[in-house]
Length: 270
Image 1: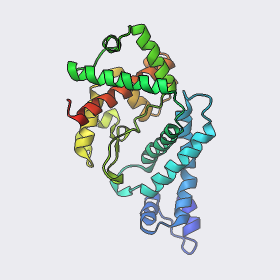
Image 2 (image 1 turned 30 degrees about the vertical axis):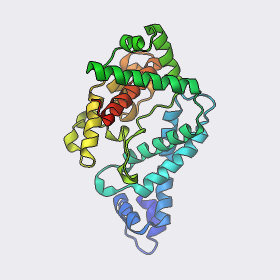
Image 3 (image 1 turned 60 degrees about the vertical axis):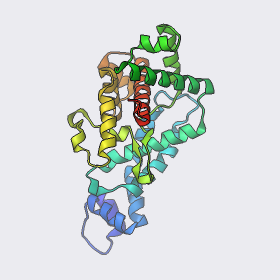
């Protein structure tokens, strides 16, 4: 990185800057040559994230399209990255790239209306039940509240998990553009799952982390392995000794639980 930037920016000087120094310089000058060098350096990251998102997507969703959507996320990450916050750019950029891809997929709106409606019904059922029970609702309880048996509920979850775009990139709190907080941005790896280390938007992040900690262990583990250990659904299945489709269902269920719980908190229900 330093060599690439050094050739384009330091032609008159043998000095070689560190990448951190180039980030500081870019924030000050918005030099387009530095920006271009960052884009070239981190372009492979876009393909990496697009590849992860592509797993489980319908055949109608082209990989190249996902890459194209992700490029916008990379550009956004480069323009908004602040090296003073102590977060590695790669970590920050992955969230932005993934978010840009999911935002574009949602705008395409390829999910059948019936599936969207059923997703909403399941989420609302989970939220209502868990608010009443004060604990995590079982599949049997959720199914009963929806007027179906567990087998029907399982089939519904399979359909939702295979067609819906549910992601931790959903914005939970939003003030102005700089006050957006996604669920994913609030998850830490197991070694640092401590609200005390979070400086910005501490109370909001604390609530989200508490909500994540209240998930069933297997669902919580899937979120951490997928979003922060960068394992694929297939790899997670091998770790947990379950099928890839089961991992997909548990991932979907975890997102629905979180969204329902956070919606309840936002409404002051719990």
